[in-house]
Length: 104
Image (cartoon, rainbow, N blue to C red):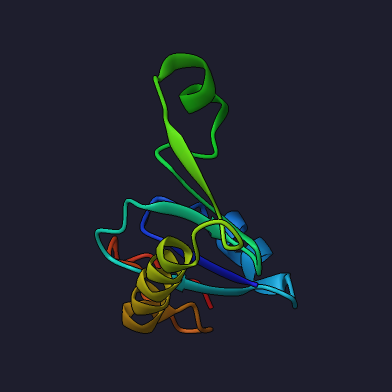
């Protein structure tokens, strides 16, 4: 599983927790604002942040794409997600956050 974030405000405990999840590969992409969730059949593209504040206080919108119903749109979303992954920087033991926070 891949997790690419665009926020440098993660707390040190959150970074450590993410690194400890063996099934999760994490990376950082500067200026990322997109929210896209993909598996082999479905793709959700949304404006919703995964915080309760967003659910309660914001007007959000999302789109569900089924690969079986719109293969071209699914492929385009997948390829864009892959491009973002390629340009992201992996969280390593010496990853330096833009805010100069270093977690060893």
